[in-house]
Image (cartoon, rainbow, N blue to C red; front, side):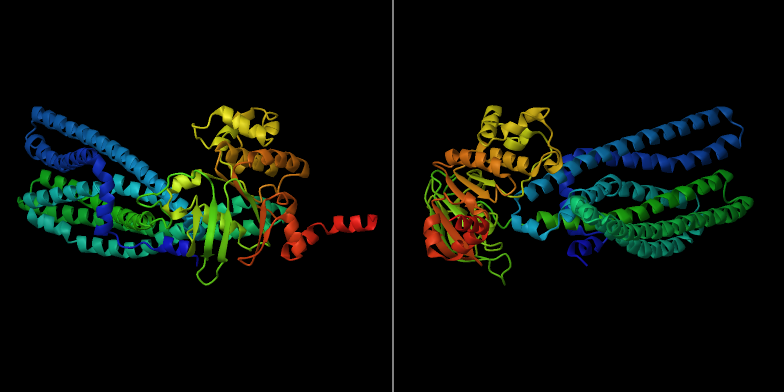
Length: 598
């Protein structure tokens, strides 16, 4: 079973003091609201305990003696207790939910901020669906804890304590008769918790599977449709959805048994009160009003016990969710800025790799003892077969990962000594797979950075010839591009990525297969623009199409993580090595045509 689904299964303890202490820190900024909610709860509980006693007084003191004036007074007092209970319950609900929503807001902001700091390697190992669950489902579980758990428990306990004390004060023999059914109640509750825990775990696992399947299937809809696999995927989702249905039905079955049994136990307690209390009324040792009050107290006694059984599930879910959230928050970023940075930004743009060795997996090295230097303003190209290590070099230069051996220098300073944000702001990257955000064309170019003016965006777009298609669409730069740029072609998205990189005016510009999805005519236009824009700017170009790298100052040929050749286009052709063979393969048809013509 995938690790993320296994993690969803773990429910843990219903109460963990260590986790609860951490959770209560989020309540601390709202302690006044929490205290106010507690006051409301205690007041409502006090009025709940008082009402049956008022019934006793009304029967024994006023109805029995036909005292209509006194009965009117006690009825008014009873009505005021009902109104007060409503007001306090409303205040409790409002304050608790308001506090819970604020805590959810704070927690989600903390998780999101932490996710932004984590290194790329973390996201390589953790599925998006699981991280989404941390920010959504798990935070919602904690909201229930704060709104219906932590503080509300005090109200239930207060109500139970008040009822128990009142019952013993009224008649301890009859009170003991009521409590004789409590062991049965605890036995039923204990068995219910064992069963519902398993069903709850199954429901949570099924939800995780549904989320993971939907995220993957919706993202890959085009692939599913092009290969005609809709029926297969539908059948797979049917099985996963059926598991979720069955798990929920099992949970509903246990609840359907549990609550009627609680009602039955409560009815049994009322029966004991009526029978044994009635005998005491006949004997004159108990008043009729006290008997009626006992019946009302019996109903109020079992209600908070039912609430506490529900809060057990809430606590159990919240403890499991909090453990997963804190595990995420406790994950330290592997790539961070140094405590004292030697450099804040890149000034010249020189790049040097010194004996760099790197592996994503310790057992399998991707780069072996890589060394090369790029002078400021120089243009180099990286070529080689898929998996040779070209994109890895770019990832290391951007400090998405840290090298295991060797060092990478920018402007003569190890990049580990740079301020991380300052380093990355100085590097512009255009990838083969362009990512666009939901929003306007304008915001996708400047990424909501108001330091970049609209005029700069337009100028960058014109330079890379993106303005040509932007100005033709209905709303121009204010056009909504849709999720992941769904309303644009692949080539148009790459042009926007060019404009984005150039708007930030980086010292180092990286093109990773950036022109692979652009037609030949557009590529010629971009090549013309890049000739001007790359002047004076250090640039590293990765391309399989050798036509895009022939004018580079130097070409580095990689093979299985090693540098095999280095030189200009003409120099490498003369070597008749790996680069020459790549050139022959790509231009085979043209070379054959030229040979025939001669």
